[in-house]
Image (tube, rainbow over all chains, first blue to last red; front, side, top):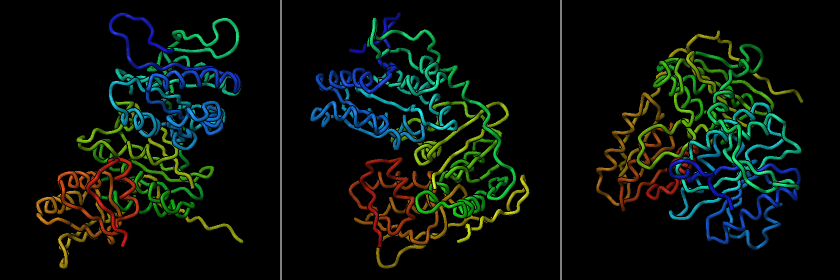
Length: 324
Length: 122
């Protein structure tokens, strides 16, 4: 049973351990008892992990899995910025109060691309702030056999608790992480993005201001269509362009720059302005029912396949990938 | 078969496109309670959209139709005005007639479970 570590003052109700596993046997030994214990308590349980690991857990649980919400993280969590609002909070907020919610969440896997990984690490770090004070446990498996050393080291910094699933003394035991420092991870991966292409076939780039928002959305969308987007993907590009450029005009200094290009099966839309994004959780939390405004970045996270951001004193760059 | 041609607009970086004024016009329906909106709902046209939906909320009929087949785009702030109006409809029905495809999707993503809006496809 996983509990919060002892500390001065009331214990933090949110519990966020990383589970380090080396093979399928260790994976099941680390996750299935966690799920079964929660089910035995009548607690709500969700499992959001890559499809191949989802099937392992489903097979091991058998009929007991009927009470578990299963989600393929490769689909639902393709954009790491979507996982908190679209997967985790979507489940926890729908549960009746008074029961600790249990989730197995695996957002980092070996074939995450180099463009995706920094967003994954920031997501894992920001979970701690997003769930602070909530009666929730999120167990995050990490594949020690296939993940890079950097991802495993980062997991120690983004999780206050760590569990080694391997055999031997101490296996399965939970201990505090000695290198827990989520703010440092958020800051470290707030890194300048590789420059957007500024010339060449298939690149559309422009400046914009309030009077040109509509024209820029039309031009960006037409360019997305030329690059192969259609249907909902093209609608998503229009929404992303509208929300990001409008944000720049309203909050980011009134003007900005936009570039749209194709890259590895995606249409990439980047918007730059002189504003600074103060809240790293912006666009990652579901809006309350009565909240006025502030949903633009949330929608961008929900519809894009990947969102990368860099923000600082010189301005903010938001880069979104939409799959063709 | 040749590759599809990709045309790159020749526009120097930093040049601002000539303003294309976005517009929105609202016309009352004649055969039933409601309005037809033509144009787009974005930052410059939010106020017109808000006023039209304020009128919809004040209407006292059982059903109110918003005909959107000639509306090309609604941004998130425009969808929020609609969600807000729908909540104030209470037991009355708000029917979106042929909205842009993305609008019901945006409403479902950002206001899940909003009960009052119906979507008519034809």
